[in-house]
Image (cartoon, rainbow, N blue to C red; front, side):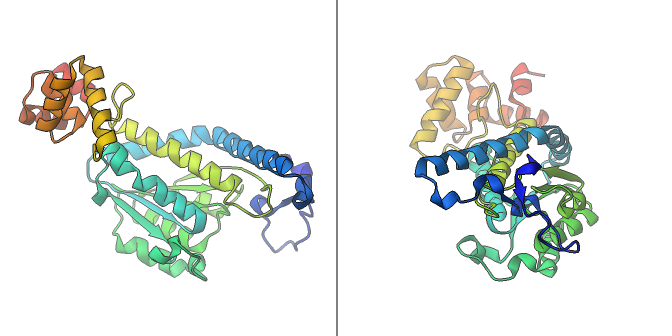
Length: 311
């Protein structure tokens, strides 16, 4: 971020915390007087800045993913998301897609959101400031060494999220945090603190914009790469996908045909025999019965390539 374009950074006293996400950039002074085209261009520029912030965070993101794969490979550990406001909603959006896309078990997904379910649709006064609730709610889940806990906050100071991450780390869970301000305490609360330095917003303080975009991108990268590391992908296909509607059934048929070279009739037969589990269907087309295919996948921790090799 070009710090030179930040206006009035020293307006608050030294004992008060300044956050880059709260700065007002002189570059966007008088934004409301600009033409719609100029405003759109400025907002898009802020999105590019968010993308650059994620790019800079890739090394740390990679470290966190490697650690998470090790924790979750035992088929016991859970993914637990923690957040408030926009950050919390983005976390839920990321997690909720893991089951249909990658077949991640619903029982191994948990969400802690400041203010509870009501907070999804409207702000709950004071909920994000309730550190006691954050600590109590994570401890109610009994986090263990096998779990990973992901906390997000643009400011990196949200008491609810910080308390949950600190309690989870003390309990032995792998903790990962995302924040958008340098020196944000949330980054130090977690074992892996990932800074997404998106800087001042085009609309001062509106962290649903650049900060939110950077968090969404980082979560996409994190969870997708994590699922690949957990053998949920084969040859670029989502082979643990849940074929829950007509579109996805057609996708499953196409995957089986393209992976095995079989025709539609064989792919459909195998999918029906496997209850539309793509990995099993591929192995069935290759000559294994359902029980053999299940055993092969279990033996190779869900790795379809290894199961196909017959080892």
